[in-house]
Amino acid sequence: MKLLEMLVLEILSKLSVKSLTRFRCVCKPWSSSFRTHHFISKHHQNNLRKNNLNLLLKCCQFQTQVTHYFSQLSIEKGLNFTVKHNIHLPFFEHCQSGPAVSGPCNGLVCLRRDDKVSLWNPSTREFKILPQSSVSRSPLVDFTSFDCLGFGFDYQISDYKVVRFVTNYFEHKEDVSRIPAWNHQVELYSLKSDSWKEISAHDVYPYDGPPEFNIYINGFYYWQASGNFDYIFLSLDMVNEKFSTLPLPEFGRFFVGQVLEFKGLLGVIVYPLLGTDKSFYLWVMNGSWTKQFSIESVFGVKRLLRFWKNGE
Image (cartoon, rainbow, N blue to C red; front, side):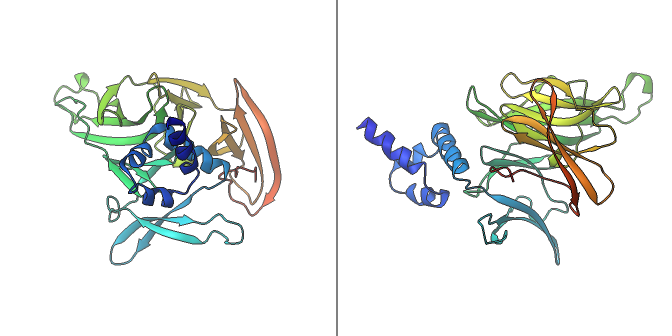
């Protein structure tokens, strides 16, 4: 009987999300099994093998009010990236500026705007709005800004974690010498505990830049940062919740335009910032930086974003 149940779940893990959503109503054991980490991971890997991927485009519409939404595009051959669905997010829909996106991580993405953070599954449309932070701050703080954010997975305890950098600003009081202009905190959210806590910060502070400068790969989240006048990566191990740094490759007058995963390793796409006739170089970190390959003299392409699974 146990073997039969395992076989049934193995078959179900190969089905589409749309089918699984319908089959939740078949019986309670199925519905519970679909939510386990083992099944989710199995289903995600099956989708990757079949190249059943979502391509999401963040959109903004200007009418009587600003509306932010996502378009799910088809990547099937011959459909030429046609829009399959427009997905509206009520939590961010009427904000003046759209949410910053971190991820994906196992098919989930993390959305942030100011102090509002949520986890979102684009396939099932499920939303999880994170609670407000309970991390204590000095009573002398006048203003707090919530800066760059990272989102990843702790494989040891099967827990999703969100980390964000916080800057606390102080007004100049009478005794300016004793009160700093600002200080930093780092907060970490655990989905299992559904709560925030403070973790030790690093001397290096990452850029609150576009999402293509940051990435989660195999248990580590990477941000581009600067320290001692050098450009570096700041990384966080999602298991032990410790920060570390590593240098960027020495690429001279070129510009790092995209951080990506390449065969399970951290990679960066490097190219000249100016000009329309460009050469693109992929560097990969595997103990040290190695130039993997180059694409010479590509005309009219502003920048590369990703490689498809088949290497295109």
